[in-house]
Image 1 (cartoon, rainbow, N blue to C red):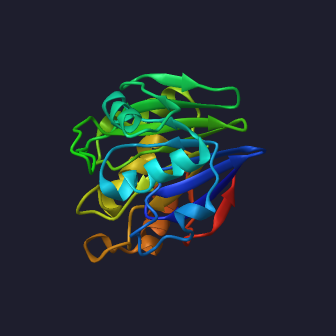
Image 2 (tube, rainbow, N blue to C red):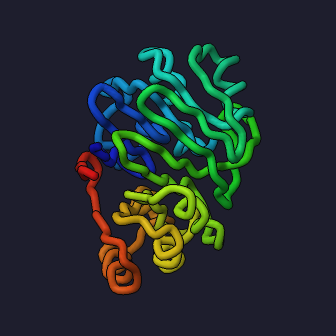
Length: 225
């Protein structure tokens, strides 16, 4: 299973003909590796409604017919906007398709869509190609980040480290220890001045203090799990 970092908190997870796009903030993203029109996902998963995650979801979903998964309030808004294939789980819910599943877990943050819909933000545990990826979404540090790994062995954790709007790299080291993934890929940093940070220091501290290995990906780069 390939994980391609597209900038900020946007990732594309691919296995065979299945392409899962998470948090498709591309237009207006200074670190975006591709444009929205270049992507052809089979599924789009959304952690929460802030514009730097919601991004191009409507345009991509309408163009491609991708299966969208978002928490129920946002799913309803997307349906009203003309997105046809939308699943609407709530916190703790799992949605299963033939070749991929996604489980919504807590994230400590806020969430309001560009259209004004308020909802609970989520992290997403995703199963694809025999691997499990945990996108923590935008979150502060909290102790229950350990719980998804007690149910499913986490192969890769996508962890925000930029601070200001999420936990910073210091708290993210602790989060990496709680999650216990084999591999950690940091995200949600250096896109804008308030979230600039030292990713090399994060990598050094995680690898010194936990059993996880850190992959630092530049936008456009991929990691094979």
